[in-house]
Length: 347
Image 1 (tube, rainbow, N blue to C red):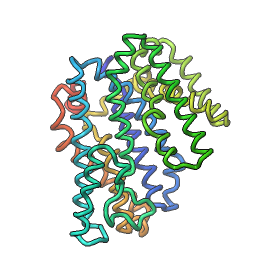
Image 2 (image 1 turned 60 degrees about the horizontal axis):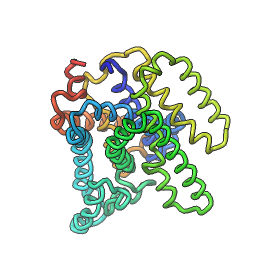
Image 3 (image 1 turned 135 degrees about the vertical axis):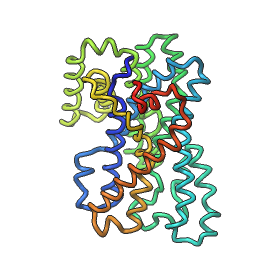
Image 4 (image 1 turned 90 degrees about the vertical axis):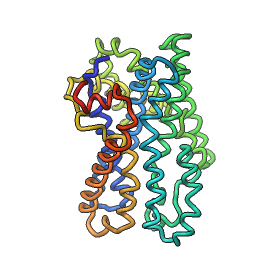
């Protein structure tokens, strides 16, 4: 596939949507309500899963071995992830309301759990953000756990696609994902069990979006000749969802409809230029913004002036994302990485 696509722009857009949404939700300031009224972090995260399905399967296809593929995935995601987790643990002492000695005795569990992508075990730090509406240090890290599980599944999906056929494999996985989500959602409603609610958000329930992205990659040539038909179907599906069709049917339609729109914007729509020439800040924005906004809430910046808080948060998140890219993410990538080549203007 040509490098002349809009994936870099889309990834930045989705990361920005999540950041803007959380700026209102975490601050609780009514003045910022339009940010969560007109933007959806849930939709942006699902769109990220679609993009991952497309790009990660492409990365696997272009790798000489499973080991090479795994190395690329680790270098892309883990250095920045670990840096953010460790930085939050170290710097959290500055705003913690417990004594320093007690704080540092209590961060081991946070570090062990979060560095292993088990953030649900220890989502908080001692005395940090205890006065905020939300106490999690970085409430988005659960999505990285799901993402890593997707990465681990890709070699198996590729093997099954070669063995049983691409369409049959993807349809089966898509159907299993939707069935899992339907069953878990009904179980939550009948029992009120919050653990089941958390489990419904994990890999099986999100797999349909990832699989739909893989379908976009595998069948991009097929879609390319039929975009008007697929776009009409996707818009119709979303219109039906808005009109309130049965929830189970919504679960079945949304991943496919969203994938059509995302893949079209990336490779079917006209090329909008090399957005990555300034660097790839989307991942940094995604994993950094939550603790930044939480810190500003704790310091009372949003309470004094919501829009000043928004401006400070935007500046801080973009600055830290740029630093993360240049000093953490980029040094771990190969020179042949798309992200490095895009910044150099060679893609």
